[in-house]
Image (cartoon, rainbow, N blue to C red; front, side, top):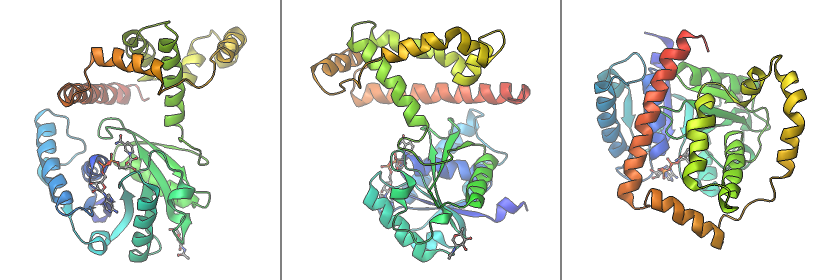
Length: 323
Ligand SMILES: NC(=O)c1ccc[n+]([C@@H]2O[C@H](COP(=O)([O-])OP(=O)(O)OC[C@H]3O[C@@H](n4cnc5c(N)ncnc54)[C@H](O)[C@@H]3O)[C@@H](O)[C@H]2O)c1
Ligand SMILES: *[C@@H]1O[C@H](CO)[C@@H](O)[C@H](O)[C@H]1NC(C)=O
């Protein structure tokens, strides 16, 4: 048996994200114990995971080397937190995005686990120094922030608390790599981490261009999905620039740096996301895709299918081209 076959991870909170983490960890051969404080919720999540794994296997999209049956055998739930934590070396918290709830969960968890156990939070918007402020030993704490849906979008931002030990970051990095995610490290915590900061910059300028009557909602989305996004699925903004000038990045900035500076100084203040003008943007979006559950779920399903296909393409293609 491989070393990972002996390792157990506890996932706390079995909603959308907890459920995805469980699928990812079992795909890598780890035993997962799911805990949720809502009675029946963790067991219901397992039933749902079983259904999803069967569908993934049918469409040849199952991750990892193990069959659905082998993966499911690694998964269990417990209604008792102490039992769910027994034997775990890594705890991935996925409860509501509320500071007090997370702080309490980690306080409870710390009382129940040994000192070497790593405490990891899925939080999107809270910095580690807030989430872990009630934990005694913060050197074992970090944020591992996934991107939705984590089963096909593999990036995970690893964000340290100011006191996090280097070895804890390294262990989380190896674990994420081993289960097929793509971890990145932030060297310090910052509001929004990297993903949401970059995303907010894109959101802001897209919103401004629509609000200022320069472009439609439909067309600004095409700027990304048929333009920039084509490249960004494979190379990031830094490599894009490096490749786009004859002699690389320095040359690129010689040619275009002033132009970019000029554009950036014309961006204006943070747009208004709530007032009258926002209403028009929302209306325009809802004319394209009405915001009732039926339309939204069918578009979500389409998004996830397409992302799966892209994940497969990246895997087949990029493995061949050695990244
Ligand atoms: N949804 C996303 O797109 C996304 C992406 C990245 C990160 N995250 C983060 O992941 C976390 C979970 O988000 P989600 O979308 O899965 O939420 P969710 O509401 O779907 O699931 C939360 C689950 O936690 C359980 N829970 C609540 N309090 C608990 C407690 N004290 N102990 C045990 N279980 C408890 C709830 O019963 C529920 O099942 C949040 O911090 C969120 O910011 C979400
Ligand atoms: C704190 O956590 C680190 C990392 O897990 C561990 O090595 C250390 O022994 C812990 N210290 C105490 C005092 O529990």
